[in-house]
Length: 66
Image 1 (spheres, rainbow, N blue to C red):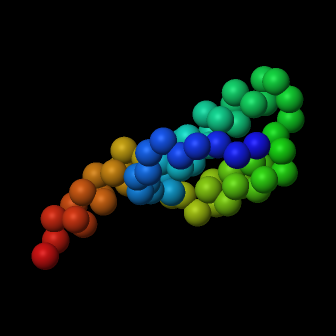
Image 2 (tube, one colour; image 1 turned 30 degrees about the vertical axis):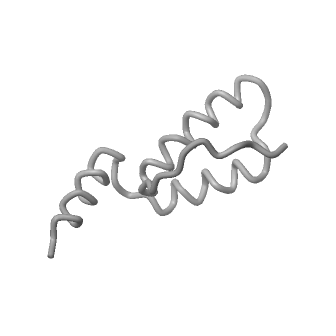
């Protein structure tokens, strides 16, 4: 069940939450979520307070600081 990494980029927790929400939605249509997916999604929901758009803007502003 190994998959090839095609690209790598850093993302915020908010972006990860949105990606996992989409994955969970697709997987729930087929079957229940596996333990690891449920656990990761629960963690992301608990610690992600910003929307992905706002998190991206914040990161860009922080990168501009000296």
